[in-house]
Structure formats: structure tokens, C-alpha cells
Image 1 (tube, rainbow, N blue to C red):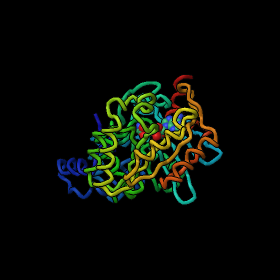
Image 2: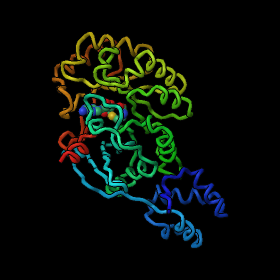
Image 3: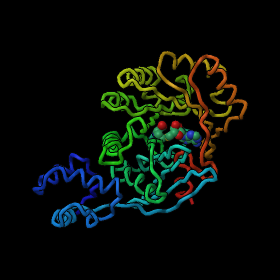
Image 4: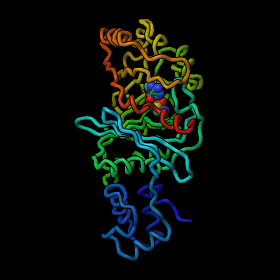
Length: 342
Ligand code: SAH
């Protein structure tokens, strides 16, 4: 059976070429055909010899997605639903800004983590995505929109640090000069708090951004909405984050979703301030985007401002994230859930 060439790292591809008795440097050429020029077949790789192109074709194929649905928001955000080879469905989002275009990637089909407010976990976990399926999300969106993709966030369906090796290999391909050539500081990994993954990531020698979905400032609150907190409570999570900040010298982002009437009191704000004290970090407040999951409410405008102002008074670096694509169900996993439940 032929292998999907985009599941290989640059090193693995070089190894295959050596086995076929070709020089290793062809791997870089092939990578740039795949990821920079978006080649869909080997015959178009015109700077490779005909013989190499034929030999590649004998063992590899170049995968692509089937587009199932595409929704364009009034604010320019585009949500894509893709069908994989095994008919599973994933979603990806393009978020255009004036000076950048961000693609939000899924890393798994479904999610194991069952955060109470999130639509992705509602259907359970199916499987990890492979590297080709992660990179094809960028390739498809790039070719569909003809836009330059400048930023990548691993904030779609799934937990990136629970598909660690594949996500890391994908990051390397996204960053590689012969890959997408996107700077490490333009790549963000978001985690619900997988402590062993954070520890490992801090030792990879990468300068990527780490975003931690906190959403509660005490174990009591976090336990209620994020089951992962039972395994990795704050006394394990916070030291791992501090270590990441120290080893990588990067500023951490804490995502704090404001759930109306649940985690928005002055006491919550005080605890958040003391939890983040001494960490080089910023807090990103996200208004809950109602998904129909649980009994949660979106926060009232004044509730959000009150919470933010309390953090500001205490010199916490804080912003409120502008929700994007609300009219197209762009929150994590919402569209896939609706599609499967139809
Ligand atoms: N598993 C990773 C990445 C995927 S979720 C993580 O937990 O960080 C990406 C972000 O969207 C997380 O901060 C998640 O908590 C948030 N999110 C999920 N559902 C949401 C909703 N309905 N409204 C607002 N943010 C949501």
C-alpha cells in the first residue's frame, strides 16, 4: 500500500530517499513542492528527475481533503469542515486580521477531555490526526483563499499535547524553511493543562507560544468544568507553567473564559491575580460562546468589564478577546457537533 508522503518528517523523507539510492537533499525540494507550492502530484515536481518522480509515485501518494462545508462570517472568519480518508470530519478556521491571517488547527477527531462548556468533547474521542491531516488544513485554506498564512494556533478540536509527537513534527514542518516557513513565535499551542506535555515542550528548544486554558482560578472551580484538573490540579499545573516560562523565556497566555455568574466574581479575580503573580504572562478573557453544552451563560458586558478592571487595577496584563465568527458557530467543535447531530 502506498504511504501518504505528508505523514513523513523531513528526516524520514531523507531516509526513504537514501534507501532508494537518491541524495538526501531532494527531501528539501520535495518539502517545498508539497508545502510551499502546494503540489498535488509528483509529476509537477519539475526540478526532480523523471526517474525520481516515478520512483516516488510507486511508494507514496499526496493526500488532500474533501470539503464538506464552508461558512463565511460577516467578520471575514471562514470555517471549514473537512472529510478525512476514513470519512471522519474535522473543522478548521481562518481568522483574517488587517496585518495577519491566522489558521486555527484541529489535532484530533473529537476530544477526550470533556470540558463541560466545550462542544468538541460532547461526541467523545475518535482518534489522533496524523501529520498530513494537520498540515492539509493549512494547505487547503491557503489554496482556497490564495492568502498568505502568517500565524498558526492549535486551538481547534482536540488537545494538542495529547497528540504530542505528531503535533511537534507538524510544528517543525510549519516552521521549516522548506516547509511553511512560519516563525516559531507565530505558532501557538493551547492546552487544557496536560502537565507532562508542558514539561516536555519546555525542553524542545522551541520559541513557540504557550496558551493555557485556565478558566478557573481555584481547584474547586476548575474541577467543576474541566475534568483534567483532577489529574493535574493547579499545584502541578502552575509549577510546570513557571518552568516553561523560565526555560523558554516566553510570555505565557492564560485563557480565562468568562462563564456568566460562574467564575466572574471579585473573589475569582483576586484568586486569578494571586495565581498568576510572578509569572511572565498575560490573561486573555474570552466571553463564553453559548454552545448548548451544560447550563452555562455568556457573561453580561458589565460583568466582563468589572472583572477586567479588577485585574487592570492590580497591574495584570489583560485583554478581552473579541469573539470572531459567532454567526458561523466558530467556537471549538460547534460546527462538527451540529453536522453529526443532523
Ligand atoms: N484542548 C486545547 C485546545 C482546544 S480549545 C485547550 O483546551 O486549550 C481552544 C480554546 O477554546 C480553549 O481555551 C477552550 O477552552 C475554548 N473554548 C471551548 N469552547 C468554548 C466556547 N464555547 N466558548 C469560548 N471558548 C471556548
